[in-house]
Length: 178
Image 1 (cartoon, rainbow, N blue to C red):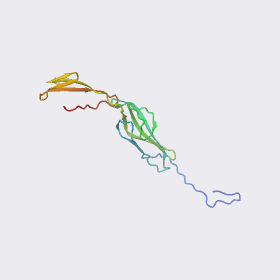
Image 2: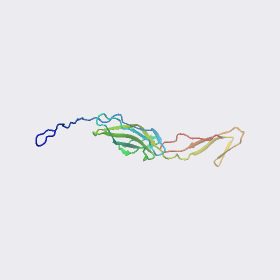
Image 3: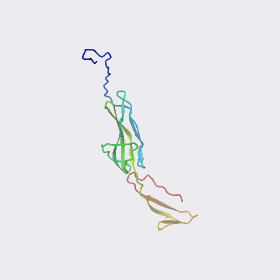
Image 4: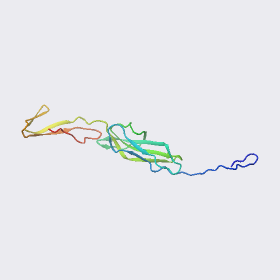
């Protein structure tokens, strides 16, 4: 309440309501697709959640990622170090695994962290060109890398491919039909 030098009080004193907000926002989420990324861009969707106290400060939202090495389709140990990224995340590197989290605070400064349940494995390299081993020839001949056979005659041969891919490994091989 204000009073002037003559002793006259303010007829409508200011009133304030005070609310102690010690609770962080709830129900936030971050989602990425689990599995392999092969184009160098990880799609990320977020929801800042709710806050019944001072309200969510949307401008505080930060997407962060943690990395680990990728070899033979398995993630190594995650670093424990988080780096800020944007959505979509186009700064990924091949032969790495990534985990993502969302950090957001309310207007009172209470932080909440939501983690994605998924890991993204980044493999941006093609597998090595397969080498072929031909064997078990029956009514067929291998000559200089070419198998020769006589149509209309029963015969067979085996072809065994071999290749490598350091990041994800080899899932399978395809052969043309003769």
